[in-house]
Length: 379
Ligand SMILES: NC(=O)C1=CN([C@@H]2O[C@H](COP(=O)(O)OP(=O)(O)OC[C@H]3O[C@@H](n4cnc5c(N)ncnc54)[C@H](O)[C@@H]3O)[C@@H](O)[C@H]2O)C=CC1
Ligand SMILES: O=P(O)(O)OC[C@H]1O[C@](O)(CO)[C@@H](O)[C@@H]1O
Image (cartoon, rainbow, N blue to C red; front, side, top):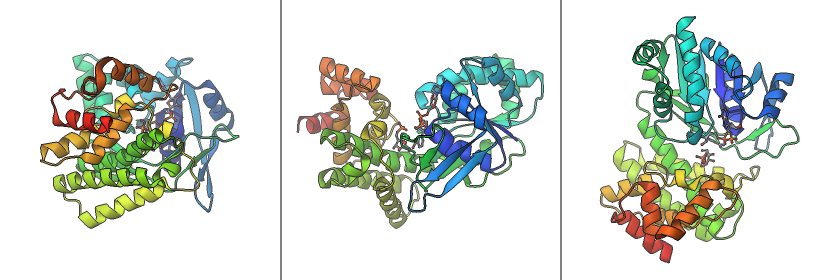
């Protein structure tokens, strides 16, 4: 079985590539980082270590790499044969990998015509559907129709904290023991062999919303409020009483939304939240707030982890006080190494809080969430 995975970064090597290799796939990583690609091709293996007491290490084998900038034809060749294509490049990069996936699928139509599946493993709702739209920009009607018959595009939700690596070995990755990969079953095409460790569900929306609006909301609020207090890591921030109070408050707010919208049991959801907070406290992980807070404009998007649940709570008549505090902290996030943070700071300076929030979230300036956040920002 052949898998092509775009993005040999933290989640690519530390989670998706590792699971696929252990399931028996030959995994080809596609990336633009030449050093990583060279190392993958020299060694054809790498180590994944658990960030826990045990430090259990697994050797991930049968892996190689292609640099998509240097060898685009090799990528197309491999994509044409792949049983599974996955990505973990970041939502904003999907549009850049779409062309080579489209070229690979066109080549496939001329050669094998066999079934295949594409799964985007990104922190976003409808990640694969978005990738599919980007791919289809490079296909004509006939190609779209032919590809729809043989290629499945299931959405998925992925959860595993893999911080920026500070290893002597360029390929080694340290990952938290917890992981969850949920895939929309009905959209899979062909005789897809179940991948051990993956959960298949009929309706992904409750799972992706539960994950995005709990793990990622909690993480984002920790990052922005913690950074505002001058802290550096997730562990430091979540152990700071004032930050924790706001994070816990925000998660109680998303909990009331999720349990009202879906049939999640309240007690089970509380256990889910406690587990997440303990993951943030992991003493074996040093996760910078600037990694977790990266790309604040994306994170303030309409459907994303902060504005998404906050505006939905307002729609059901609730006031998201803590989420609004998290959003206000995000609007006050000044980090000059992050291009989106720099852009956001300029936007806030030029348009004020209501104007800037309205622009990045697509909410009208008169929206009550914009007003609430403006009040919190002033405080
Ligand atoms: N790190 C984590 O804990 C988790 C990350 N995710 C999601 O996984 C995705 C990737 O995140 P990370 O692995 O943390 O980021 P990362 O920055 O470690 O990895 C991204 C990789 O994509 C590569 N890349 C960039 N442009 C490319 C292109 N045009 N073609 C091919 N490769 C390209 C980069 O060189 C890098 O190796 C994001 O959507 C993130 O939200 C999801 C769950 C957990
Ligand atoms: O990867 P993003 O969307 O930039 O956001 C960082 C978040 O994603 C994760 O890397 C994985 O869920 C979390 O650690 C964090 O909440």
